[in-house]
Image (cartoon, rainbow, N blue to C red; front, side, top):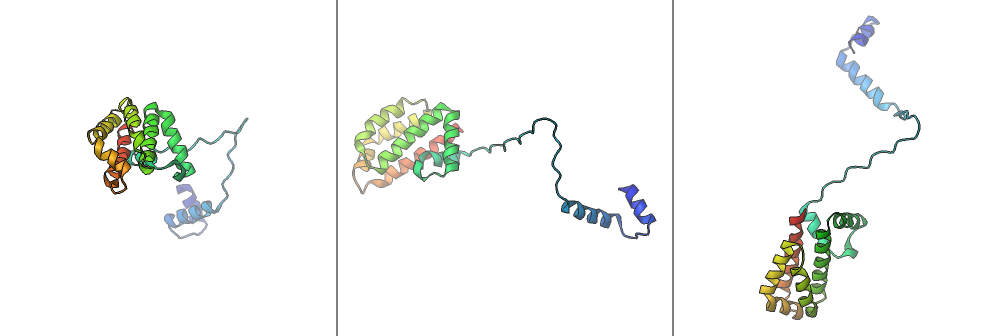
Length: 166
């Protein structure tokens, strides 16, 4: 820029270098962006980097009904489940538990507990053990309309279990 300053000042310009830089910057910004010259096949732009999913985001995806997920959330959930078989199992069992609670299906509890206790997820096994310890209350919560508070707690607790995997 120093050479240009000297040339401009030799032609009678008395302004500062900062002013020249500012004016040239504005001028350059107004120019159209040239197409990059590529020899041979055109290169494809790299895919944008995938952002990391927080444990909180993943846990809500795991307990939210699939029909309520956006296309982007469904894609993200599929990517999570494809990346780790344990997470896929956790998602499947979590969805089964949430559905069992929402539809109040106490007859499904015993089979679900067996599958959860055989799961590779230590956290899910711990959750299933807690449900087993409070079996009568959970069974009543699935059966009786006024016992929904504890079952709702279990559902939200299940959502937090997936954070241990991410």
